[in-house]
Length: 248
Image (cartoon, rainbow, N blue to C red; front, side, top):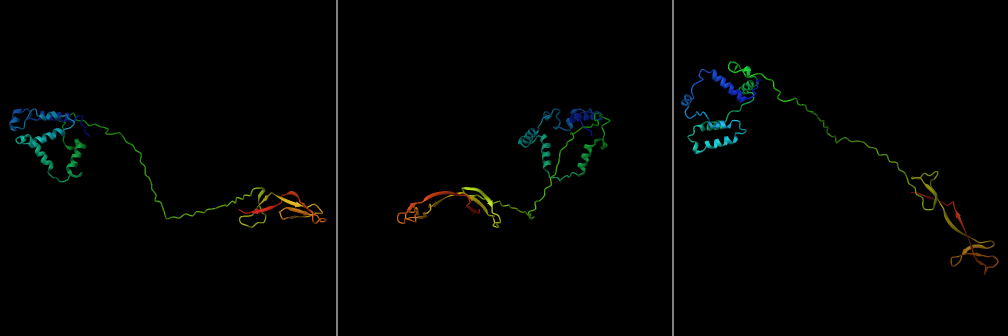
């Protein structure tokens, strides 16, 4: 690939070299001006536009001037109006495989193979190798997405183990204790409860005791039936063998 370090400078140098080799070179500027009156200007104002970063403002101003009544007879505006009209003319589309596009790409990619050479008049063009961009590496990945099946059924088994919590009442001295041979569900449990009983006894030979009209325990003496009622003696004892069964 032939790459120019400075396209403008290279073009100017090539043109000057070609002019020097042209036998017509050296004809006076006066003769050129006579051949094209009104079009020749050795110092055109457009030379000030060289090197400008943007030409949009100058272009819009020039087009506005050429469209004004003041530029009716200005022959320099003819080219501008012609260019605008040509750009507005509909044209058939040009595909990337068009012969003109392929020829232009071939000339840009390998100018030396086009049968045109400047070796006789210009020798500054050399073949150069230029790195356009460094190697670029990236990490790529792909994901597999699986559809969820909503019609498939699954079987689940729930195993429950029941534990009965037996509670004995207040005053229990032991228990709960499983009752041997119980077939009840849940199984019977027993609690041993301690409670106090009051038992009345009459000393012999007295009989009783019996309740009188006031609810008192009284003893009866056999030898004196009229005045033989005596208050019974109270004797307290504790029963430790009373059992009660409780189910939850």
